[in-house]
Amino acid sequence: MSTSPLADTTNLVVPLEDALAKSQDEAKKLRAELVAMQGVVAGLATKTRKKTKRKRVPVASEDENDAPVTTKQKKTSEYDQDFRTHGRMVMRFIGPFENIEAIITHGLKVDTALLGDEVEETNDEKQLTESWTILWEKFPGFHDLMLGIHKNLDLIQSIAREIALGMNDARSDDTGTIKPRILGWLASDATTSTIVNIPKATRGLDDPLIVPFLLPLEFQHNENYPDPVALIKAGEIDLNSRQLPGFLFPIDQADDISAIETILTGPLMLRTAKGTLMGPSSALKGDGYHQGKPGNASIIGLKTFTDRIIAYIACQVCFNLSSQPEWNKCDGHFDYQDFFWFIVSLFKDKVLAARTITLYNRVVLGHAAGLTAAAATPATQSTAPQLTHWERLQAAAEAAAAVPAPSSTDAPAVPASSSAAVPAV
Image (spheres, rainbow, N blue to C red):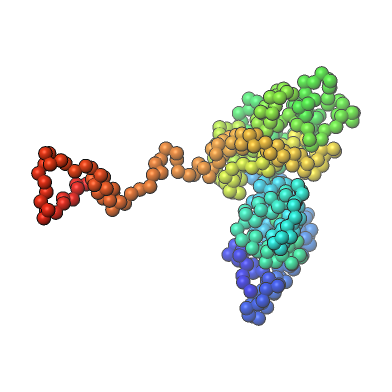
C-alpha cells in the first residue's frame, strides 16, 4: 500500500482497494480516512443547503483588480479545498460545459485498456481524451491518483463533483467581472473601463448598441434582410450556434471573403480576454498591460492561448451581451456548448490557428510567442558553448601544430637533442 501522489498537497491518503497491503495497521488507517472523506463529501450538500439563506449577493467592484464577491461556501476539509481549487484552475483550459465525471471515466477507461483492445475514437471521444489530458497535466499527481482508485466509482464521483464546483466558481467569477463592464468596452474609442449596470433583461436585440455585435454577419448590411431584428423577433429567422455573430469581427466587417482573415479578431473579443485574464483595468490598455495583484492568467499559469480558451471567451461575450438572465447551455435555439465547439473547430485551419493565437498572446500576454518563449534566452544572446581554459589550451596547441614548419633557408635546423618549444597562448 503506497501513499497518494497528492499527499503533499491534499493531506489525503487514498486506499488502493486492489493492491496488497504492506501492513494491516496502515490499511486500517487508510480505510478509516476514506470513510471519513466520503462522509464529508456526502454531507457537503446538506451543509450547503443549510447556509443558503446567508449567501451574499455579488456586487461589482470599482477596484480594477477586485474579483466579484462569490457565493461559494467555505470548504469543509483540505481534501475538498484542493479539488475545488483545481477546478477553478483548469476551467478556462477545458471549457465551461464539460462533464468532469464523464471525462475522468472515459480517460480511465482508455488508460486502463489492455494493449490491443484500443478502438478508434469518435470525435466526441477524442474531445473527452483531450479534456482528460488537460485535466491531469494541470494537476501533478492527479493521473496516478485516479489510476489508483479507478474502481472506486463513488470516490471518483465525489472528486469529480468537487472539481465541477470549482469550475463553476471560476466561470461565475469571470461573468461577474465581464457583465457590468462589457458595455463600456463596446465603443471603438473607449479609453476607460467603466461599470455600466444595465439590467440583463434590456440587453440583447432590444438594445440598438448591442445589435451589431450579436447579429450574425450574414444578416448585416444585407438587402435581403432589411430589418433582421424584426424577422428574428417574429420567428421568421433563427439565431443558431453555427452562425457568426458580429463581435467575432472588427467593427463594420463586410460579409465577404475578407471575413476569413479577420474572424476572432474583434476588439470586443480581445478586450474581454484581456479584462478577464489580466484584470478589468487592462482591457483598454496597451499590449500586455497589467497592474496591481496577479491576474487570472498568472494565477492559472497561462503561458499561451489555446483554441478552447478563445472559444470560452467567445461564449462569455455572447452571454453577457444577451438578455438571458442566467448562465445556461441553451438560449432559445442558440446552443452555447455547440457554439464553443464550433469556435474550437475553426482552429483546424493551421494558418488561422497560428495567426489568432499569436494575436491573443501579443495583446493579452504581451508576447506574440507566449510567456514560455519570452522567458527563454533572448535571440541576441550568444548560445555558443563556453570553453574551459583547458579546452582553450588544447585549441591553441592544435592551431600551432597546423602551422607549416619553417624551411631550412628561413631558420637553422633544430638539433635532434633539443626539445620542441611550447607554443605561446
